[in-house]
Image (tube, rainbow, N blue to C red):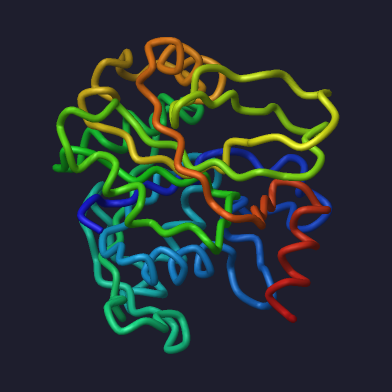
Length: 261
């Protein structure tokens, strides 16, 4: 995997207040470990070696986690975008080509910028032609990360690739319209029956992110993706379910049970 991964960690875990009221969502414990550590293991198995934490709400706790995992003293200053080596759990990198150490950096958005503004701000300090972008509450165990990387390997391909997965009843989700392997639109929640949904993992070209206004709050899902879909600039990459989303207590319980099984 050539692209660095940006993990979106800036949001408030308002719906998870009953589970962990004083933690950023990505540090909520799942089966005895912070959710972030499960994500790192998963991405490492996909060949990712460089991770950037796009932090916001309760960023000081994320910085504290990073110092501990990197073996740094509690008073060491973490410079924005400066990567430090973070060893993975011995059981985390189970494939022969997965790294046992990741290079991890973080930045803190100057004000709440939502998913689009936060992604653009994080990418501004990284040197890469495109990025893997992962929601801080998404876990898609069957995703072949290289499949997203491959879609952007050719300069003639669109601005981004979106992992999508099909579920038997999409009533609670907004669904994705796909034609000829491209995302062409998004439908609101409430439509019963099976459907394709956005899985919260993307590969996005730098020039596409650079086209967004700097330091402005923007939602990828509401403000950015519909326009890019209308321009036929989003490739759909189907991934087998399940998709775990720890953004709600129900989703957290589902992943907790799966990890303990």
